[in-house]
Length: 138
Image 1 (tube, rainbow, N blue to C red):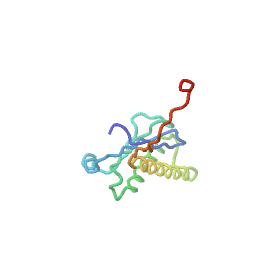
Image 2 (cartoon, rainbow, N blue to C red):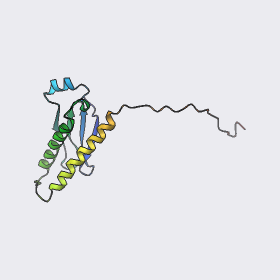
Image 3 (cartoon, rainbow, N blue to C red):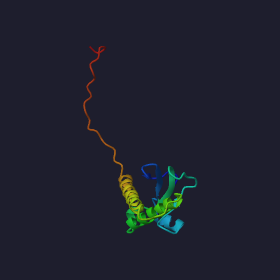
Image 4 (cartoon, one colour):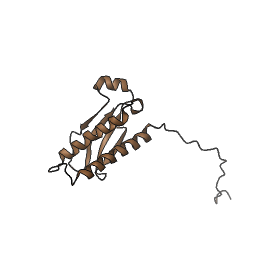
């Protein structure tokens, strides 16, 4: 899995997480001993750029798909809060963090739904092409 399936942006679109989706859930589970996992990016800035990676087995085959995504998004959020210097979860920022968690999950599912749909090429009906009348043809 070298190229991510898609990216999910958060923190006012300043940061993102790359999402990788395995095409073979059985070998993913055998290799990783789990259905999904989150890891932090090797190098990252506190407030912008790539923040981490979420690896998922093919979600269409999993009866626990929503729970898996919620679980991995929660790992991402905890990691994000822990990397912010001086930030603790309290009454003042609790709603912001909860809203951001919901937003990341919503964006992930919307991108996944778009990514998983088969790409159908548009076939345009055969139209009779009439050449334009230019000075040379007149």
